[in-house]
Length: 271
Image 1 (spheres, rainbow, N blue to C red):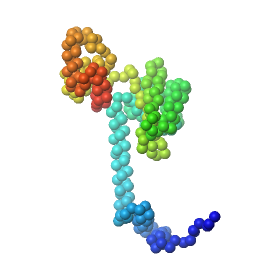
Image 2 (cartoon, rainbow, N blue to C red):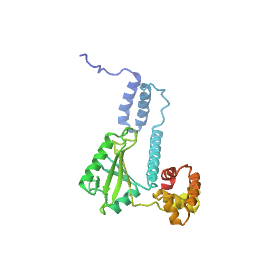
Image 3 (cartoon, rainbow, N blue to C red):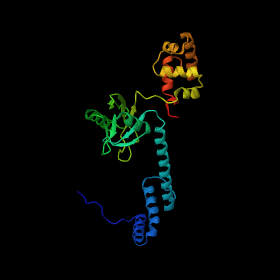
Image 4 (cartoon, one colour):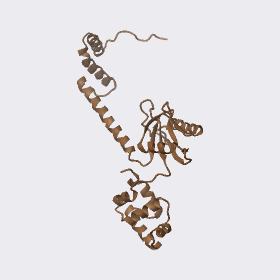
């Protein structure tokens, strides 16, 4: 096997960098210039036009500005999670809790269906449920970033016996950074929870009348038109007329579409 070429470099640019490094070892103020020369070489060997190398202080300022920008975006994203009316938990590979929005914390305190252990790992109220939860997180970690990983539904039992519905999914593709610090998201819904000020939100968003807003809330809660008519002491035909007006304002054609549009619209956010 031929020997590897270990002879000294002869490229003038590389020699200049080597001499500059030796000089900077004696005089630290020369290091910014060394950095500029290294960046120029990297640009040259990456087959890209080598732009004028900025001052090292400008490079530091650019990096700091970018970090501040990323911090602001991260803060805004976490604040957006607080607007949701269901719990969202961000989990690490072993089920470590990285972040939980306010709704997730409220559901945990009220139901005790899940909590955080002393080691920071998310756990359910029973060991068997914890095993299922951790297996779901591991599955999400293995399928992280893939389109065919739909997620794992779970039912976590609260201390009062009520079920809390959970859904564990992988984080989206392209977000597995920081050594996969976050590999899974768990969405948590409490069947007993209600949307605060829901009729008023519906009125503001869709410009509904008070009766139309109450009808929309009734349909979302699973009541029929006949039940709503009896509760209101009015005829079924009148309620059907109100439904047609409601559907037109929401942008739907059928009763089922009215419910779908409302549940996927901004009215379910904590605005």
